[in-house]
Length: 152
Image (cartoon, rainbow, N blue to C red):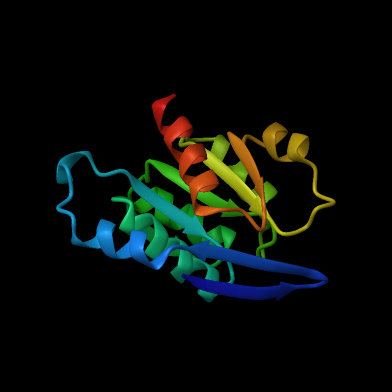
């Protein structure tokens, strides 16, 4: 098992992944490449992006990433992902602004994430997010949100 700790103000973020699960999943053959969902991870923390990329690719998803809201909108315009994991706190254009801008031309599912416990889930949903997770969250919780969003 490995643990990743990251201090966000007074909140400690911890994402855990069972090493044996990563090994088993990484040695399995993908079920069908044409149906692989493409996920865009948008977060200004490179360590968080890498951790999510590892966890999601291990579970069969194709992952790209962006470090801020403006770059994420460019990525969507260049090739629409099947789902976006979007952090609330981003430089230049925060996640709420990014989600609102995205909703003017796209209905791609968005899962908003935030380490700030004072943020309101209802604000994220009103901006157009399909779901909201508070950091820290488990990989299983994120996967459940992703699978649910992709079904609808």
